[in-house]
Image 1 (tube, rainbow, N blue to C red):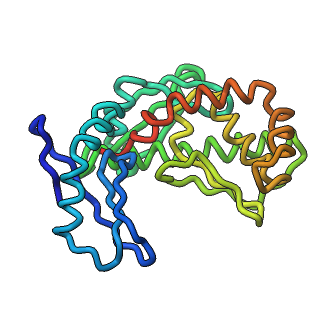
Image 2 (image 1 turned 90 degrees about the horizontal axis):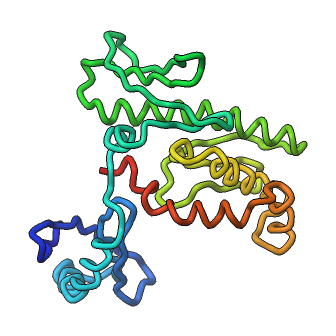
Image 3 (image 1 turned 90 degrees about the vertical axis):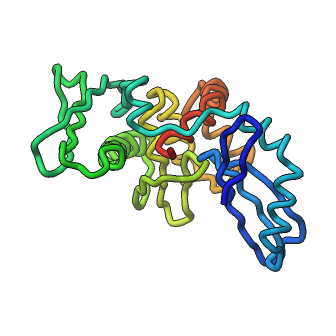
Length: 239
């Protein structure tokens, strides 16, 4: 369902019924979709009335947050990807090949993302290719840092998390957000080191932060820089 806004635009509404929920709550996800959590037996009519009463708040939030963007749009404006501690220039090409792939050019300084020109959905094909690069690049970077720190992880998953940059399981599995290839190398490294620190400290205790400070002496600076760009980067690939 959709709600028409005063500026003539409309916002998608996702009504989520949850058992045990007592109150109605409205939030905005990284696709700039309004999410209303309601009690299990709450009617759509009651949910829509609640959203209507929150119209001013919702419009205010939408006016402040970055817009959701496609990967094509993002790479057109920011033609760079991060891998192996470096920042590569990106060029997107249409190819006669049947399968999307990427190659390095310009002596390794440029990544060429080759997308079949007959793709039914070029944006989806490009997004899948960037995610493939992200898995290759971050597996190498994670393995590099783990070896330097004499740590062992069980596996790596590169996923499309809704809001988190990464996570670490008790079994030693690490999950990273594919969007880490869109940010600066030092910030990508910070997230990887953060998750590697969880292999030793599965919490956010003082011991954890002390350990992470050893892994990344500029931890506080990198945290602040990452926080400043999270809202925009998390909305890439969601339009």
